[in-house]
Image 1 (cartoon, rainbow, N blue to C red):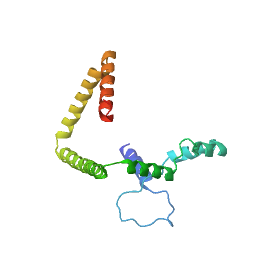
Image 2: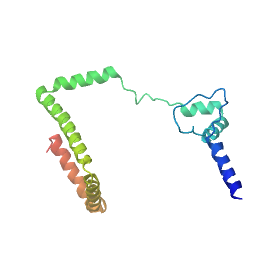
Image 3: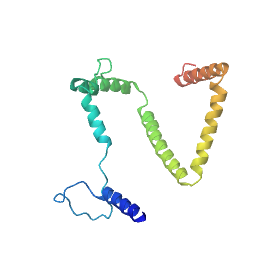
Image 4: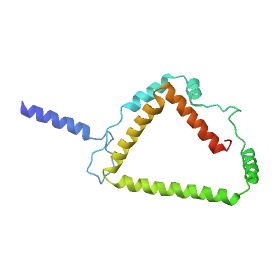
Length: 164
């Protein structure tokens, strides 16, 4: 009985390990790993695609662009040029833009350094989850606090826009 079990299990393993190519097509491989068996899901996918009519198959893949979303590149550049010409302190704008690029670069270096410390990223995730929970409780959970948050955002918008 044990011999029958061992011979059947060896037959199963050889059935899995033997590739499904003919002997003439086989190539010599340097790897000791056996080739993977063919995927069964591709057969079911191709048969399910065949069930859809060809006209409907192509209509599912097509996308239509509407005239509302089209942007003319020339119009975009002329608008940007007009806005750039209206700017009085061009050197200040360039300095702020360069400073923003440097700040993003430095922050990515800082995040990479923090991420390399073994326990610190998990602690930062916990701090972020705690702050998110506090923010939801403080500003989003109750109607009165949502109104307070909306007024705070509106005052911040007016400060940034300079209308205050």
